[in-house]
Length: 489
Image (cartoon, rainbow, N blue to C red; front, side, top):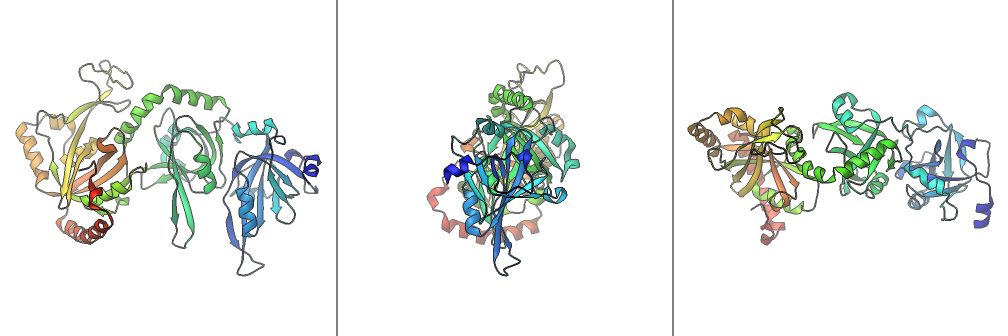
């Protein structure tokens, strides 16, 4: 059988035609979708299963294939190969495609045809090393779209919500790949999600979301700060929760890893040359550019519950958010020995050395032009009836909004005015929105950032806290007391 398979002539994708029979095709898998089930109209109560993939045999020719059958056959076939492998397809049904209908959910391609695979007539197997042409393997690094037809991350951010819902191509470097998260929907369907952080010369962090197993598996192979991706046909959306634009991998998307194009090589050189600077600046850029829709944060915690949640989230790169009704127990704005306002570089956001007037990160001299701005930069403690969160970051516009003055106005205040301002908050309960995220530079490896702090409505605070006490007792029963020895204390 193996000899017959090899001896049969191979049909190039450019030569496909519906009249062909006993066709043998060899191609590189460049895209693949998850297995899905649908009700079988011919057999009421049963399901048919399917998945799709895209194969390529030359720089200019690639085609979509779809397999249909029972669950065991389809799942077994899907598990037999991955993106980046060469496959041999024998006896596919070749059909003329309806372009508008076919490419609504599948990757657009130059072929006029599509391949249908069935258990009874078709066979698919991974090429052995002697069957796979090295020219086919090289195709994995060629984008399926014109190399210059893409948006940079800076372009996407600049266009903002004008791109909401658009399908575009993106070229960017991989900054980090999150751990896959698995969940079950309300109708008991299992799902998964993985967030990839991208960056380029203009943007330090941009989220691309993967919701299917195939793209998540591909993403797990990427090496952060060493990988560039060309993602064709991703959906751009405005994320109301984060108040920013994001990209989503969809069934039309084909991702080329480390594409062999000049634009990608320039980006790869950039990330190599700026690797050290980027790692220092990423945290500060995120720190200064925090923009979250506060209305989307609804979970109310006590300090003790937040510590428990932080313990459970150790090792998780994803931040979590919460609301805390608490007193500001430490607010040293009237202590002359503590620096409350600092100069920051407008280029990168880092603190500028006041003695030299030079930004140590981007090496810009601030004496010759306006590249410095004043910003609140302090740490506060938050206390409720269950404990205290120490060293919470209280900076920038959040501090200005809370204190009711700009950094410049604060510096013009007398010591008496600063003390009076402090006691306006030390004696009153506040409603505080917080962000918790991993940071190797923060105390205990966890940074707590204040997103908003306003004096709380007494009735609202009382109602929320009374409901939290019962939940708190439940959590404490599940966590041994010794595990509360957190860096947060």
